[in-house]
Length: 121
Image (cartoon, rainbow, N blue to C red):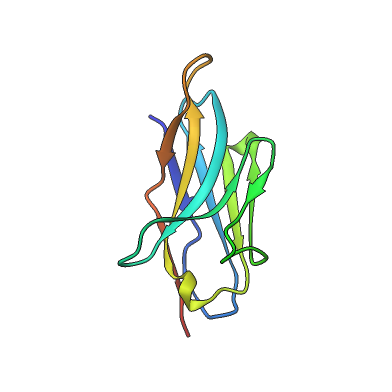
């Protein structure tokens, strides 16, 4: 069974930093796109950062310059380094990945269970 497991969420003060990790496990042939999303109470889920298998990244303006996404393809892991955190960054953060389970099979989108990030003094 394929799954994505996030870790690293915590309570942090404004201006602080956190590093989230997400590891894909199971019988995986290939991972293309990987990304981080977040959802605050009463709001829609939004993209935070994305990275292709070749390392091309994408960020929305709200986090550009503060957040950095990276991945370790050998470990099937994606990271999100978050610096200069603000109270408005408070949300559940979800990992997302497009994965193929065998050669020639299509890529399907998978989601992790989420990890809570709270920015508060």
